[in-house]
Amino acid sequence: MNTMTQPSPQPSDDGSHAGAARRTFRQAEQWLGDWGLSLVLLGIRWYVGWQFFASGKLKLMDWGSTLALFRDEYHVPLLPPHIAAIAGTFGELAFPLLLFVGLFSRPAALGLFAVNLMAVISYPDLWTFECPAAIQSHLYWGMLLLVPLTAGAGRLSLDARLHATLHALRNRR
Image (cartoon, rainbow, N blue to C red; front, side, top):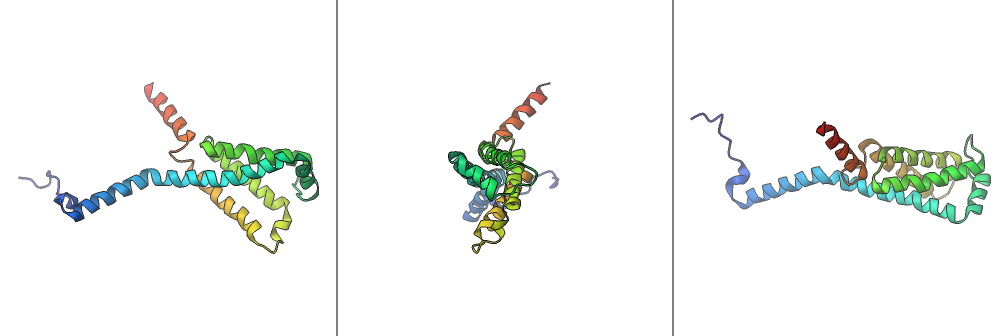
């Protein structure tokens, strides 16, 4: 009998507690490999998206103060203050909505990254506050936005559904 064609016995098939533990570990590892990154990406999308969405809501709720901030405090290069206020507020409201549902996640993350970068560039006082939390928050958000920008939205997203649907339609032909 040729032993090369017979499957070798798996250590986990011995029926022992150790075998059951190995099977459970492999199943958990498989689940984390399949869904773990998607859960992390979902958390990042919601956490960072909420920071910007809340800021955009505040700007929209008191538009007069927002215009004053962009005129007197924020010095956005190349844009008049009222245009910068509209663009910044729009970005803080629209891009997070896309991230929340995971639709066009990479462009949305790139857009929020640009909004974040513009905030850091246009408000130099961030660097001079005695409390470094202000600039650190922007640095954390920027680093977190690089994750969906490079990895995509994950399985728990409309991007994934759209990709699966398009793939199925292509395979029908």
